[in-house]
Length: 179
Image (cartoon, rainbow, N blue to C red):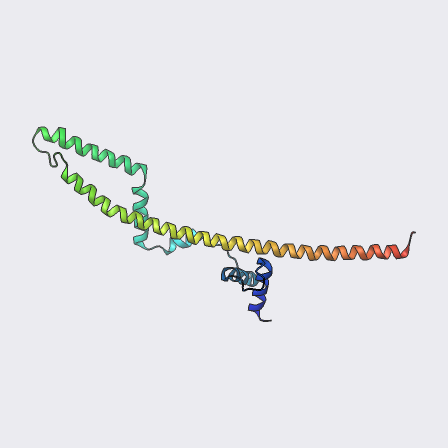
């Protein structure tokens, strides 16, 4: 029996796959068990190290744009803009963006046009990170489950050996008769 056949047989026994071939993710975990390699790793650190400058920048912009401090600051800037153009500069005839605030609308539209795709890119990367982390968690949990099942088998074999030894002693005592 080749090593791959042994691994497939072990995977079938551990997962109850019957006569069919176990799924590839199960075989991958069983191969790691056979090689005594670790499945667990810091997926967040690995992902952080693999991000490009643009991805890090987009994530930072999305983090800032989705914060309360940004919303409060943004509201304050708009309020100052309106007060400045309607009451202060309008009195001296120097308002640079009088009502209906066309320049302000242009800035807000530009901000929305740039910020929305950046936030969506960041969310897509976050979804990909979540999928990768879930896949990794599945592998770690599967390995733990297979290891626990293997330990149960070992304990069962040990108990069977102990029970056989106890039964042999009892039979020997019965053959000797009462003392």
